[in-house]
Amino acid sequence: MTRRGLLGAAPLAAVAGAGAGGYTAGQGCAPVTPAVSVYPDDPRYQELTVGYNQRWVGSPDYVRLVSSTDQVVRAVQEAVDRGKRLSVVSGGHCLAPFVFNSDVDVVIDLSGLNGVAFDPRRQAFAVEGGARLANVYETLFKKWGVTVPGGMCPTVGIGGHTTGGGYGFLSRQFGAVIDHLEAVEVVVVDRSGTARAVVAGRDPADPHHDLWWASAGGGGGNFGVVTRFWFRTPGTSGTDPGRLLVRPPKDVLLSAVGIPWSALDEAKFTRLVANWGAWYEQHAAPTSPARVLSGVASLAHRSAQNVFLLTQVDATAPGARPKNFPVDVALVADPKATLAALAERLGPGRPVERRAAEPYGDTMMDLFAAELARRAPEGLVVFDEALTSSPALVRHLPPRLPGSYFLTRGGSLGVGIPGAIGIKLARPEAEVVAFTGDGGSMYTIQALWTAVRYGVAARFVICDNRRYQLLDDNLEQYWRERGVASHPHPEGFDLSHPEIDFVRLAKGLGVPAVKVAKPAQVEPAVARMLAEPGPFLVDLVTT
Image (tube, rainbow, N blue to C red; front, side, top):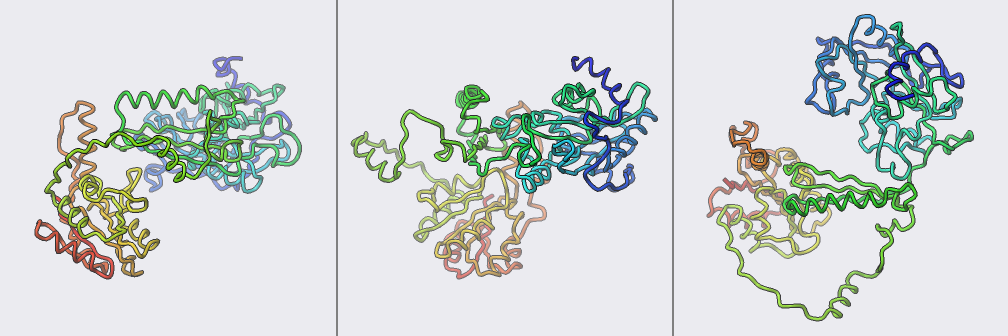
């Protein structure tokens, strides 16, 4: 039977109320609570009519919250009787408007169907259709030491994930989630308009086997509402649950690499993507030793500043510990001694071409960083969250020694102040100076109070341009790439009205502070900052 043919036949399968093996539909594995209908005047309605992609917002007549298969059957029957178009939400991570759109009259929310249990009758693990991946993984592993090879996002629902195939970092090693699908319980509607629950299994002798086949990759949402999945790895047998699904690796090795967009032109980007895809193509065979390694390339927009490559490898696999696969020549040696030996064998290199240093700017950030570099004690540690002011900072205080320079990664804001406090706690003998923006500092400004309370003598410099300048720059770049003419930026980017008085704010939290708005104020401010016995803040006006 083809999937197209099944579209007409699936409703007929609903006539029976039980699947092969005598497993009655509707028997749940989580506590059942009364169904709840949420209407537009209910304060919960707004939260329940939008998913992970908040671009799509629904306006259904009501949302039905269910916690049992029988409640799903009644909800479907009610919608059919009233001629209402319905959709189903499990985790809400669908990025397309399949669940929340203007055509949908009723949304059935399966979040109350979240049980995970071992079914001894079927010798398989029963997972209800609204369970989130985090709960599925945690329960399967803690109780039985097993897993399903699904995705890494913890709040994704098992319903959409499984019916869409279910792929994750362990899938190259253990297959997709649907490869371990033993059976499904599906609420369907027959030709008479009657809603019923049907259990369909992997066994070809199951009278509803075609419905199982369709649910194992035929397309989520096309055939009915899946209220329960049973998982068991093909070829396993026995009564020990711990041997009926795959076991995750005891340890894994992770690699996260961020490549700045500024380092990539079209040719380099093309080569990066081609090499990434070619490696996985060359090692795609299910018997390849490299199947223990899997990864994802996040080719984020330029506004994210970086392309991210995330890789995971089973640490228990042969050859995994050196974090590579067999090579023609492998060396295991002390890096310092090896580099010295290589330098001796290579001999003297060609003279280094020396160029005149570029003249430094005369911005307030240049002046302040230059003065700090002049007065900096040995072992100065810089935490750089200056963002748009960073170029001037590293011109005068370039990171030359390990452990002397820290910065934020991944586009997060607000880590400068607490980051400096953490470094100072770890290295109390070092002089630690944090540079952060005015906008970023407001995320964690309360950490100044922590520095006072625990006597952490870190220094904090607010690069005060009275704007979210980084957002300004990213937005302008985004418009240029799309040929959009520049126009006024969102009002929220402007931090000048009311003006933030960082000196008073810092003093209110117990930290002495000074404002630097003129070149003549730079030298005494740096001197005072380094002389203070406790934490100190400088509001450096950079506009």
